[in-house]
Length: 173
Image (cartoon, rainbow, N blue to C red; front, side, top):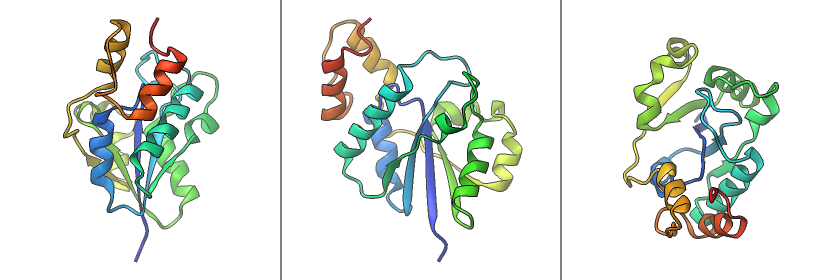
């Protein structure tokens, strides 16, 4: 049987319970790769990449789902601050994992805008794309807004992520 890998790309700015609700429905994959965006394709401002990777590592620890791993492939592929296309990422993963079934997982916001993705038609021809909406309606934006307004975030993300954000005072400015 051919191995299956889900690639869940997101800003993870920061990881939220919405992300968690998507990931929990990916347990049937042999591996689920969480891929933080190195540079946002549409110019969204994000917390430093390494800090977001640390948040994703804490998130993975909190989830305790044994098929999860962090990938920093986008940083490895980056040239300056240029955005990395999903197409280029999937081609790179195909080279790393030849013969494996790759599925790109998108949330509802990206699914609705999927036609704007570079080579969207070719992506859907070469790889599987799984639209997987959150079952828990918590977005990273809510977490950032709560922090700016000095409100508690522990009910919006996992324990270690909330602690790390608070200890480092990320998003407070």
